Image (cartoon, helix red, strand yellow):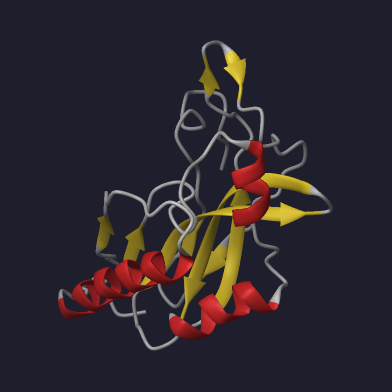
Amino acid sequence: MRTTGPMSVKLAAIQLHDVQGDDAVAIERIRDAMTEADRARVDILCFPECFLQGYTLDEAETRSRAMNLASPRFHRVLRVLADHEVTVILGVIEQDAGRWFNTAVVIHRGRLLGRYRKAHLFEANFRPEPNLRCSRQAICSSASTSVTTLGSAMALESSPGKVRA
């Protein structure tokens, strides 16, 4: 990780329209943003929730888009992102043991450094998201770099009392 000064970290957040169900196009958009971030000497680049596969509330779409973080499909994503210096926090739809999670993964140089599964899901029309599961355990790992330790949280989880260091 590069830094902009003593004990400083340059962070950028990007808000792009997601690409619904097309990993290849989404990965190109991610790589383009990472290239720009590398040029700007950004240390950490944050993408929106479920950005890789496109946010959906449809269960069939979720099932077809979700990926296991140990799968060859996810490892291909890691390989494609390995050429960049910037650390990425990327929203994905994670599949694990037949359930789907709104997960943020931390990636640096093609390595998965950590993940965070969202625990407080958006309630559309006062009903929880039908396709995604809340994390019932603290599936949150920190990612240590040369200058800092990263932890991630998502919308609705940053409310007082929901996130603790």
